[in-house]
Image 1 (cartoon, rainbow, N blue to C red):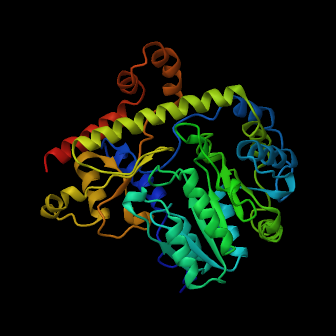
Image 2 (tube, helix red, strand yellow):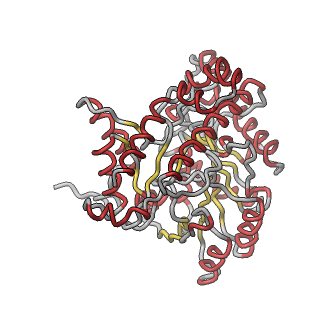
Image 3 (tube, rainbow, N blue to C red):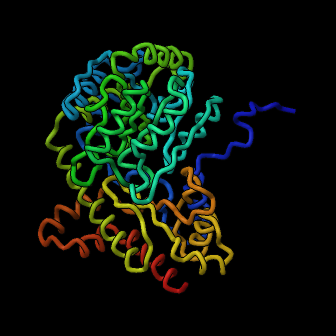
Length: 424
């Protein structure tokens, strides 16, 4: 009989990947499924980046473990330019997706993982696989489910010298909310006073709907590890390219991660790294692409929030990305009559009744009995949406008519949810 590592035995598949596979299976059985479960960017990879991949398809040599020098320099210059905190080539580490780099960070650093709830589905399972302690920090509805400096200080005060990594993710997966400048300053002050390592997961930063993302590295440069990549803002999830940018004081952590990488994945795909250089350089074409994508996502989030508000489904303010986090607490009694008392049961019920696939709040660390779910409003053809933006929206400026043309399946799925709720 095989003996599995107890840290892995019984651990379920990632919830986001599992719901995507279930959605595909149901589609094969003839069901119309609205795929709001997996958070994959609907937009195409920008043309300048695709062209660089074609040019570099011949690249076949192993690259340095830390990453291609040109790419590391471009990443350092990008974060210096965007956030006003000077970073250099030797402070950048390239990996096959930011998820893998997060895993390696926990592997080489011996300390607790501190996670606000709700948070992305893979942070905690990674810690469990490695055998690290996970400490969940509660958040409040009035704070848009974002971590407060007060809660962080309360946690750190209990054991001032305990080594810990605190994860921030903003704009947030699953809520779409972000921090204000003052909130970032307050969190940075607490983190600095307790020498906390901040892992700032800013993978959705470029998808801030106003293009106004701010990094906490500006206020805590000495203790913030920046995490980013191409999957969300560049539409290249399957390319698997992530970046970590370290403060100088954490060279030992970066070097240890590189050693672990050399014994596991060796290096990140060479053609992808060469192509990614273009993604991190200043480009009018990419900026135009981002401005359109941000506006399309904002129009969608505003539409969904307004429609949900009409039937008393609440949720935090969406500032960026392509998620919304609706709460069905107002319908608890009606749902109980339908044998729905948990977030997971709610998602199963909605999938069965409407064909809309979502993820329960419990997958993101929320209590089982909380009637929340994450909805990723990405079930549309992003390339067509960008094309229609140029041909249709810019001419008449009518958001409703544009969305009907560009994102019909998203609107249909939302209307099915609204119709179901009205029947309660």
